[in-house]
Length: 240
Ligand code: ZN
Image (cartoon, rainbow, N blue to C red; front, side, top):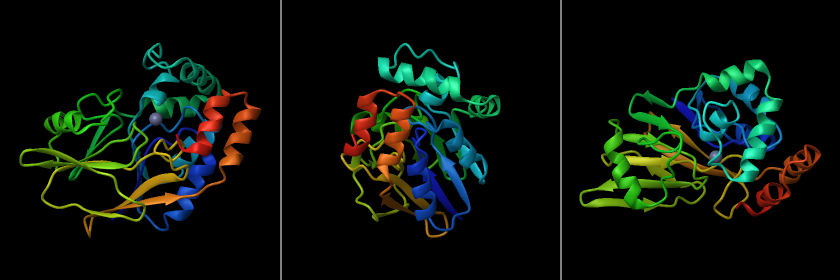
């Protein structure tokens, strides 16, 4: 089976559509959360997902804009956008977000947004907190998002190593346990403005990392029209 594994679409339809057309044929999407928040097209992004075979967990923004969690820990602009997103959502799409679980297990894979220890909030950035998180899932591999930075943490005999895969890098799923982050579709934060995702092939047992350009200005224009904060508009051109 071929899975399109993606995270943090963040209501960026232009980026999501570029990923869908770049990915070619796949059997199913696994969405690691934060379908909405920041961008201008929350309903259209949810509807694109719903129109395809997929599984998805909830992220902090998905929960924030549906009042499932308290957003007072968000920065002020993220709070403002959460509120705006909540007002845009159709009742059906709000229900869709509310029904997403925090954690899924599919064969050899655990699927969460933040971390297996704290699925909604924890950022797995360093090898130290990655190492601790290997204790919190039982499958060989775990997919996470939330940091918007593509990377792979590998458990070793005496600790944990991190790899930062280049575009088109192929990561073999072998004996070692891995925590795998595909990066962000709609708001990359690693200095590369192109949408990031990966393709999982469970026959070959590989993950192929991909980067795809999309018309950033289209999303930016739609954000300006919706009066979303300027800093959040500009960061998309920087990939930061
Ligand atoms: Zn996010």
